[in-house]
Amino acid sequence: MQVVAMRRAGLRLEGAQLAVSVASHQGTEAHIALVREILNAAGLSEIDLQCPLAWPGNPTARAEAQAGGETDSRLAFNCSGKHAAFLATCVAAGFDTKTYLTAEHPLQQIVEEVIEEYSGDKILHSSIDGCGAPLHATTVEGLARAIGKFTATDTDVVDAMLANPWAVGDTNSMDALVMQHGMVAKIGAEGVFVIGLRSGHGVAVKIADGSLRAAPLVALGLLHRNYLITDATYAELKTALAVKALGGDLVVGELKITL
Image 1 (tube, rainbow, N blue to C red):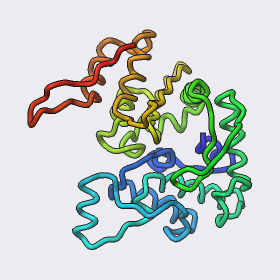
Image 2 (image 1 turned 135 degrees about the vertical axis):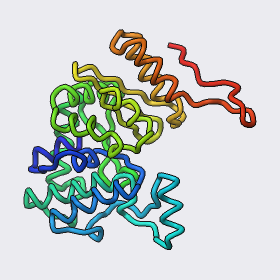
Image 3 (image 1 turned 45 degrees about the vertical axis):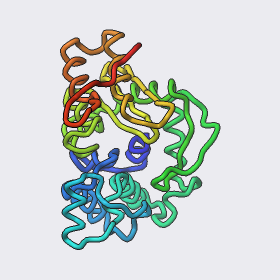
């Protein structure tokens, strides 16, 4: 919803740069390079980012950064692509770049309008996300409507995501694995997972305890139960995404869906 608002305000990115604008990426060199490209093209730099400092989420990238004597950075934060795109949008639209995270900022006002339009819900409460951006409450049903509408109508962004799923998450992240099958997917904080189909169908899941372990399996189960994905796709993704229960080095169990 945020990148839809950015594009309405004048953001013009393509390919992997557009995909990383909707990302919760893992801070690999490739992710950070995309973020730098967006900032540089807008005449900005890491200094202009207002997301938190972080180490890469990707274990290999984090180990390499630490071994190389690097420090945590805003570029490595999982939402840095979105923040870079926020800033690039501000430059394109002539908005202030210093206050881009305030609720009163014109770009954030457009974000609110898009969320209400796509979800069909009126925003009744707003707070601040972990990345520092405004965070707006919506229903799970509204989130499902929103991701379905987005996938059916915002084809340029959808095409960029599906062509570059690694840029949205990581090579083998939950959402990237689903997107490799032609469906839009995105993880969210506190056990949120969404899947959107080009048909306009959308699924949103919120796990009450905040864990992501079961969220993609439940979303896939709902799609399968309603005949929106094939048996083969469901079986393949279920195997890829199911968290195994280990007893020592042995697999002794797994999560099962009961829908």
